[in-house]
Image 1 (spheres, rainbow, N blue to C red):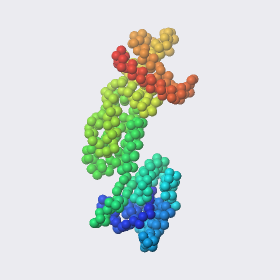
Image 2: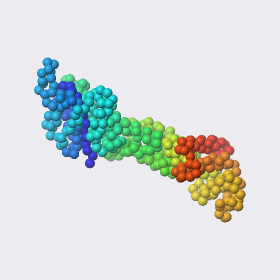
Image 3: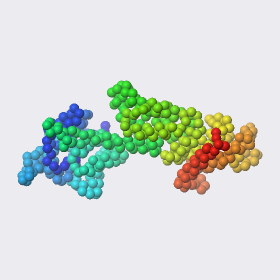
Image 4: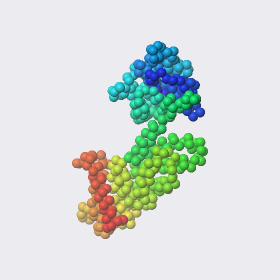
Length: 437
């Protein structure tokens, strides 16, 4: 089970007493926000002896607010003052709070980095983090966000809560101050990374997982009756098969628009998305999907090559390009695109035509020579430019798929540049009326 970890910064000021509140929660009258915030979290879910709390202390904060009688009045006399340690001990927590003491003040970059790493080092893989950022220097909210994001990646933690006790905003009549939840800032970082992963890399898994986790409680509460939530969930479930068709080179699906069609239909249904951060992604997705036909089209496969190239999926891009060119020849000359033997004949005929191979030297079974002859001397003669472009792609694909284990392998940059050039060349030929399919 994941460990719940409370992390809070303790300052040096003589904090005033107030009642902290959030929703239905009301704390006792306290000086230290940590008391109130811990009681609030305990009311949301159970904590156990395996969980932890870390209080971050500079030497001065430890003297003034961790131990008793650390504060003085204006005349320099000690004030009777219970420190946070005594207050936490009185709570009978299921675990013993720990301290990260002797922390520097954070007056320069080196000291800030030391604080960052001291906190990071106490975290364990899979921890659930509950930050309180009420006290400390002004850079601490930024440090918390960056630290949380850093630990999400390296230690697979989850940021469950970021709160701030706004003492200055308390109601003077009731002495009640709000606990403000800033967790949305961490959530927005997650959505930003997930959206970037989808838009830039074509990987929807993170975004779908976030949508699932955010929508699950809403759908459960509404028992599936929340229309916007239901439609949003359906949309997120359609993203994976759509993206996976590109990643796994499912050309036949893309040719037929198999997973484009339901996604387009669902995008038309979803006028608003329940999760605000998804809206810009949905707009981008609408534009992305709009370029593909939801009925059979060889052009879909050429567009898939661009889609993959733009996301750094170079092997997929050159694979789509080669197979799309073969499909172009098949469609142009009324040959079934999913007939493997016929596709092989087209490539053999194109090779013979390009290299002017005499018929006796054709590497073709005798019974198939009439078909190849028809292709070479009747159907493919008008496709010479496309055939040249096609074999440039074949050479590229062979180099990529054989990992460069061949004579004169190309450098990676040249491969990437040549894939782009090949796509542009074929795109130009496709726009030539004489090569229209």
